Image (cartoon, rainbow, N blue to C red; front, side, top):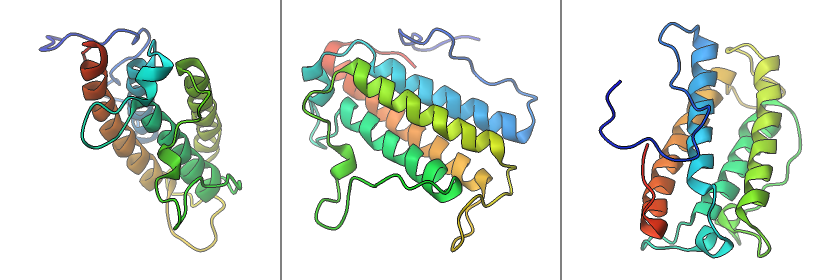
Length: 173
């Protein structure tokens, strides 16, 4: 495959999904790819770079990681898995899930993100694509949640890519 931009550093083991996977494996593979891309964009950043907001949007790479932990906990943990992860936002603090803890560094944020993803993967493995999981009042299927989280994670991976390039010049897909 020809690459029009360099492959990002820190992406060892990240693979584009095979073209003939079954539906659930294809969705899982693209979700893993998006997650690995976000991880690559945060790897090696200093604590100051993690919270830096070099664009007018005030989004930081660390904020993206903390937000994506909330996304994983909400959709796979709470909605489909029946868990009770508290949501770090509300009417008085709508952006609470974007806030980076003061003592955070890249390793601690990545460890927290990887743990959330691993817990999500356990729920994903336990359900069929049309399953509703533990929810009792909505009709979100695993298929819908996997698609939604993959799109959300991919969108934030693009934001993290631009932020990383602004922070230290590192770029690549």
